[in-house]
View 1: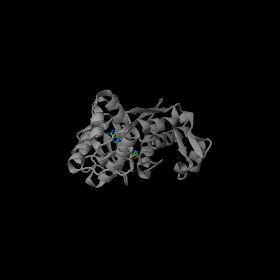
View 2 (view 1 turned 180 degrees about the vertical axis):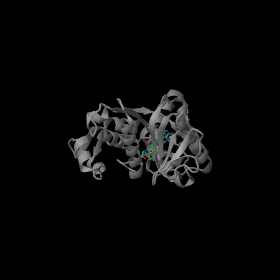
View 3 (view 1 turned 60 degrees about the horizontal axis):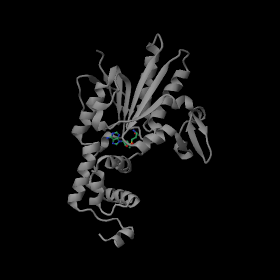
View 4 (view 1 turned 90 degrees about the vertical axis):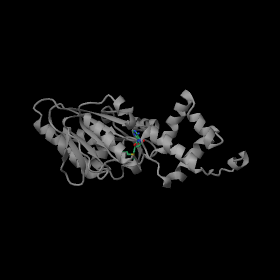
Length: 287
Ligand SMILES: C[S@@+](CC[C@H](N)C(=O)[O-])C[C@H]1O[C@@H](n2cnc3c(N)ncnc32)[C@H](O)[C@@H]1O
C-alpha cells in the first residue's frame, strides 16, 4: 500500500493470514473471540488507530504492539477500541430484582451490622455498578441499622474505568431511570449532563482486571458477583473456566448473577442454581 493511497483514508484490506494473527492476539490476551463477520470492524478500528499514531501498515503496527513497554502502553489504547462497551443503567430487570430480593433476605436475617461485598465483572463505564449501588442504598435507606456495602467494579479497558470513576452521564442515559432514583442519586451539571452523587461514588471502587488472569485478582468472599454481557464474546470452554474462577470467589451463600443464556449447562460442585424467573444465577453452598 503506497503512502498516497493511505492518505486518501481508505481502509486497507487485511489478508487471511494477517486476520488470523490479529484474532489470535486478541483472544490470547483478552479471551475475546473476534468472529470472521467482524473483520471489517477490526480493519476500521486498527486503521483509525494507525492513522492517529502514524503507523503505515498492519504489519508495522503489529510490530509496535510487540515492542516492550511502548507496545504495552499502545495495547491499552487498542484493547479499548476493540471491546464492545455497550451498557445501560438497570440493563436487565429480572437480574436486579434477584439481587434486591437476595439483599432484602440478608437484611432480614442480619441481627447486627450487615456488610455486603459486590463485584461487577466487566463493568464498562460504570452504569452496572452504580445501578447495583442505587438498588442497595435504596434498600438500606428503608432500614434504620447502620449497614454497609462496597462494590468493586472491574474491566479490562482503562478509558472505560476512568469514565466510571468520573460517573458523568448524558441525560439520554438516564432517560429510562426511575425519577425518584434520578433525583436522589444524580446531581445536574452543565450541558445536560448528570453526575452520580459522592455518597454513591464512594461506595464503588474501579480497578483493572482482565478475566483471562483472574488468578491475579485479590477478590474473595464476595456476597454478589455480577457478570453480564462479557462472556458472550468467549469460547465455551473459556466461559466455563472463568465462571469456575468466579464461583471460587463467592462467600458461602453468596450469589453469582450471569446473563441469561450466556453460559450453557454450567455445573460446579461448590454451587447450585438459583431458581428465579428470567435469570441465570448460582449460589455457593454453605460450607
Ligand atoms: C458489553 S460490555 C458489558 C457491560 C455491563 N456488564 C453490562 O452488562 O451492561 C462488556 C465489557 O467487558 C469488558 N471486557 C472485555 N474483555 C474483557 C476481559 N478480558 N477482562 C475484563 N473485561 C473485559 C469490555 O471492556 C466491556 O466494558
